[in-house]
Length: 334
Image (cartoon, rainbow, N blue to C red):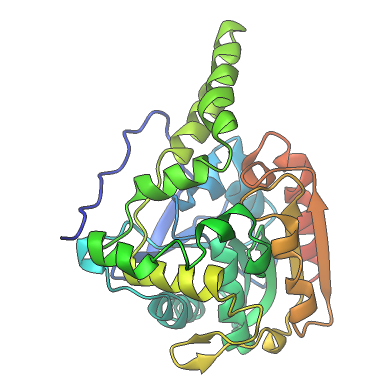
């Protein structure tokens, strides 16, 4: 019997508030275009791609902590691809559909909306992997690729790879039993990678902030996002675990999507790969190999003192990451 999708978590503080419009949908996937906050200064639009896990408003957490608003303020035309919340009827949705059909259709819709003939892909976590695969399959529509904490070489996945060892973990059997993989299961597995930090230290930090009389809005927004995961479409989950974690097909140049071979050497656009040196979900050794596998002549690797989430939305992201991203993009977007 398929597991029903849990309703969205109660809203504690408003998140994802930057004004935007829906410009395209397919099934649960939606393409949003943010309304400009400054005159457009760059010819190449940006498409933000997030993972199938958690919600993409991490790009636009709060008005004072919004990567989206930073890009808009720098004069970029910004789009976001939101995979939505899958229902029980989506247990058969595959990565072939999402990467091979939804992503190119969204890119085509951007062009029809007058955004430009090509775009910059900014992918975060698994969204970066999906963006990189798309760019390798369809390099003609991609101007730049920015891969934030993007898993590429799954032989370096650490504890996650041990947990996904096919001798102990049967992804297909799990999906046969539950349909879509429940958000609570994925969330618990992620938190158990660092149980003391996630179950003890986070609450201690909250109490310390409260006792010191500090503003809790930012903390509450981040906590809300962390505890707002979504179910993983069953068929896509099997492909993700078996093809990436267990067989490492992408790094081995053996992945196919929609029957087409994926060769990262076909990705020739400029590439910036950014990792956090404290990232336990996608450690640098898992992300860095992208630079050795792509065919880009213009490629750069940047490792910053941050964790997986803090890299993009932590207290130091505004000074540490965001300006470096736009400095790199500014020279490659006109």
